[in-house]
Image (cartoon, rainbow, N blue to C red; front, top):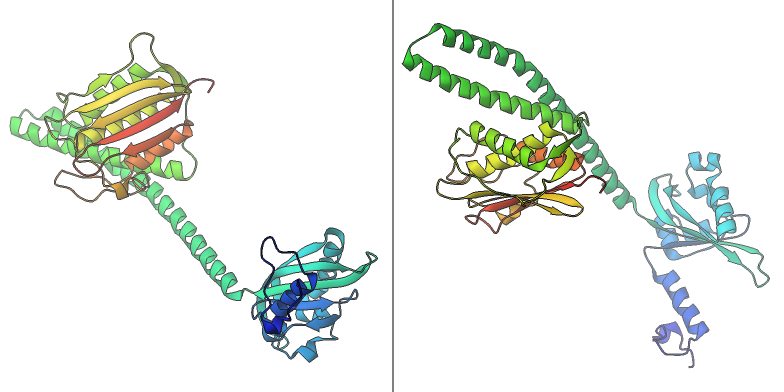
Amino acid sequence: MTPVPISQGATPPRPGDAVDVQAVRECVCAFAEQTIDHAMLLLAPDLTVQWANPAAAEILATPQEDIIGQPVHRYFTPEDRELGIPEHEAAVAASRGASEDDRWMMRADGSLFWATGRTVLLSDADGRNAGALKVFRSQTDVKMRLRTLGNRVEALETAEKARIAALATLSHEVRNPLSVAYLYTDMIERDTREPQLQAHLNAMRDSLDAISRLVEDLDQASRVATGKLALRIERLRLEEVLDAACEAALERAGRPDRRIERLLPPGQPIVFEGDPQRLQQVFVNLLGNAIKFTRDGHRIWIKASVETPNVVVRIEDEGVGIEPGMLVSIFEMFSQAPASDMECTGLGIGLALVKNIVELHGGSVQARSNGLGTGAEFVVRLPLPGA
């Protein structure tokens, strides 16, 4: 294949063509001359610039003739020159064949730009050091965007820490007045025989219980966020854990007569390891949601099985369901589904706690739903001993 000068429209060889080295060289030379993004500096072994392409003149803000013959050091920052960075790049390229060049560099007018590129070792026909080719791009806009994003992440982390600290303070400060309210409620209840007043006291106690649970959730959320939630692992029987959770969830919901259908495998009990108090909190929260969002006459199931290496508990309901878009974020702190025609109270802490407690046990939890009006299913997987 006869090489065609690049000025006459030569193109790189196609797959299957014999490679014409001269044509490839012409393409590479054309790229070096025509690119506007990639600066190229041909360096002698003493790091003097022997050649510079037009993009280098543009990026370094100085004519090509003023670059040639100058030491490459002049385009490094004074701090990098003092640290010997130009010599270090050359030494790394000499030992490894190339070195990464991602750092602030300096234009001829003293302004800085963020350069990303490589310094590649060049050798002559006898394998001796013939200098190096330094190729770089100005990526200042990318660097500044990354720095801005980093600042935003840092600000969000600071705000998150402040929020967690506020939650911990709030839960702590509310406990004292809550205890006083419980105390006086008990005193009034002991001293009265009035049925009407007793009904009011019962309502007050229910409200205090609700506030107490909310404070407990806030306290647990702050402990999870700061890594202070500790587990007390014991050997447990799954049936006993689920029975206790069902009873507690129904009592908390004020619906002791509500039916929850339980489907557990017959035969030997399922034994596993976990923190009984924390796991009861997991299943009480999940069952509480099912009770809250499922109307009377519609069913709730709690199913258990062993799917080695896990114990699997499924809590299903025929309730209002979950929008598909919420399935991704439903376990995030303070996340709540859009309001429905059913009562929806709370801060969106319960499911976040469920996820964190289950993961502390080495397990996982998933939410499933085909959309609004189709019910929901929550699947908890906990590892079996030795898994």
